[in-house]
Image 1 (tube, rainbow, N blue to C red):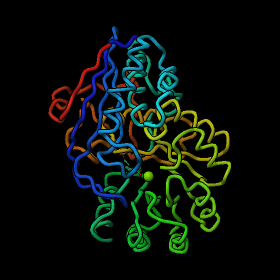
Image 2: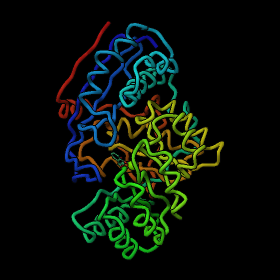
Image 3: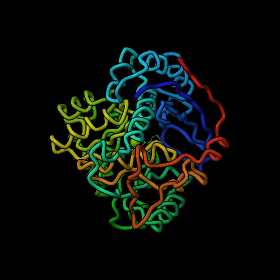
Length: 368
Ligand code: OSB
Ligand code: MG
């Protein structure tokens, strides 16, 4: 591609209901949308940082700064390059993987749209729809959680993930099991525990969960391996898997029996495919995580989740699970428990310009 300019926007997208995790509550999704401008047209990407550095060290204003001052100028300087070369061009900048991922996606989308090829076909998708799981935030009490989960089951979600934290783990999980029996169920701790909590976490074994996601800190690879030996529930890593190298280390150490792949967290969709390939070769199941994406990131995630190694349902919910008005013209919907993998060129979704403008709170166009 030849890159003429890049536009960055910060969006504030109101959530249909507050989303609470062990690290905080969000009521508005703050996100960066990247537009790559080329002679053949535009491409779109999404930077999945949140407003505060709580899930990871990245956050919106930090991503904006590194994009506008370092990452975008590095690509504009090169001017013409292949999408597969983006990671290498950006590699002198340490970290900032979510920022890099959103920029790479915009370039990749522009290139694929120009070629008339879908992202799914490019990444190696083998399915035309993917099973849809839903991530349910911590509610005011277990009864409210049962109520929320019941609503999602009625909508057809095929797998429920509930967020947990110390004091809101065993009873919440027990309430969901008691209300809905043997539904596919998993929990996500978002790093809220330490090895000292192993006995509490082992109490979750009786619920026959699909997995427990990221019980310990991002850099606790050895502690996760120690914990895994004390639990019957499979340990799945999210925050810890920041790259293909981290995935290799986690697998070598026995820190993860399952991997949640999020393209933003690992620096892009191409790095995500590398982790997928590694896990598939090792016989380790993977699933596609989510970051409350808009229709742009949601379309890309559906394409990624259609690769053959994604054998567990992902956090690939309908747009309406989070938003009343998406920024694409055909927001993802759940049909028979599945979300369709877009087949049009690139991401396969078109921008709803009026909707995009309505939620844009900051913008900057960077040229050479
Ligand atoms: O840990 O998977 C997580 C959202 C923001 C930050 C971290 C996580 C999440 C989710 C939401 O669980 C998943 C989704 O987008 O549906
Ligand atoms: Mg998680």
